[in-house]
Length: 268
Image (cartoon, rainbow, N blue to C red):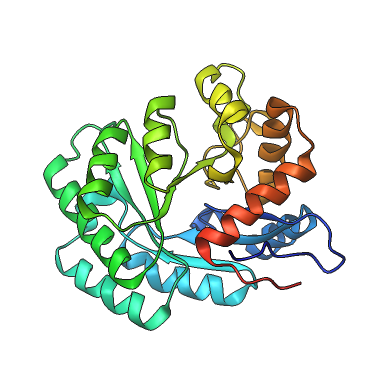
């Protein structure tokens, strides 16, 4: 097992396992955003891609700041931008860059007009690449958790995270049996999210990791505002309260989970 990374003085360290720090919404103050994250204890951020055109900027963003871990993939909501040759291009990026993960990939059955068959073709293609390169997958599954589970079983030999999980407890249990983790972020902080909050309170801690999905999915305290990776601390505090445990205990467990999944080295 990869040990959790530690801060310079052995203090609490968090991992934002899903943050789009390369997004143009951060172009004006990206350095300040990273500084605030570090001040909040967020030592590492996994930065997933959305389409082939975004890969070069994402790579440069991650090279510019220590602790940013790139993932390259093709997001289902950007289906119109993808081409079959992008899967072969992705293979080249995985060979050259050796990223932390493949993604963001997955299925989205919520947005109208997104054809399911090509979504599945791109998703399964990326799953096969992840298996070939022994990389975790960062999975988007909106109104499509059953179909995602079926694809994971079909390809097999995979590990990863279903980010911003919003499925049922039964679906969660099926994912745990496949060795997958669940990423929870801002939505869990809203009191109306009763099913999600119940899951956060009771799920096995070894399958939980924290995320923001910044600049999207702000937590309840910054509703309607731009999200950023420092806010993963608010997600931590909420989940700790729901579980009746200390934030430090949840931080230690979820950071260890993230370190194991993404093979984050111990920098202590």
